[in-house]
Image (cartoon, rainbow, N blue to C red):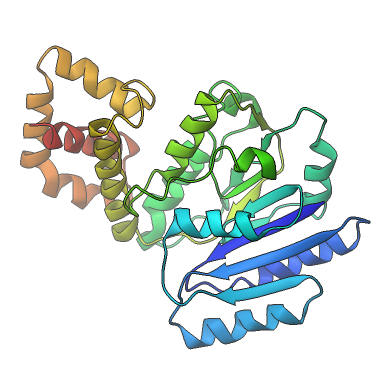
Length: 296
């Protein structure tokens, strides 16, 4: 019936596994929990995670080398034995005690992909984590009605259910560099194949907030990834909002001005975004101007 698939790297997943295990044991369904570690080096985390192997139908397996986010998800899906695959990122935790049951009840004869959503704690984190928290709450933690307005771009891969035969048609692209936006490319491939994404209210909390400096670095890497996707024609120009705006600017030659903004104000952007009051408006401008800079 259900394979719960958790890729991890240097993260203690014992609380997550304990929660989903307790939930699914209350249900009369066949299950397995596969936790694949992408070559972690932290011995204390590895030791804690190995305790998972004592649970029924649960496996914690450490890969010999790091293969990347796309490849490890594909490997998990390949080795899963049940019809439905529930992908959960290592740093999430279900909000509700009927999280697994809600997913199973949502399955119909026509279901292909179901996304439950994401939440962030209402409690403000310390100053070093504010940017990731603010972005997550405003841009990712969207209610179902809002996600359904743009079902593919509002889809994130940290908490979703997919039929295995659908995943066999649309898997994660292992040919792209291990940058960011693998979820964007995955959702686009779903759209190309006319595979429907159902959005429901069944969220997990995202607990693993990166420090603002690391999140900013990853955000710039995500723009590099989009730049690569565009160069290789992997996504259409108007698939994401940032690329759509960029090509409108380029059409009237305004991208040169935005490229200058990036070069002239990069230090000011960094200062604000790493401060106690990061501006998401400046965050958007930073990424857009950087994309323009890459195209000059």
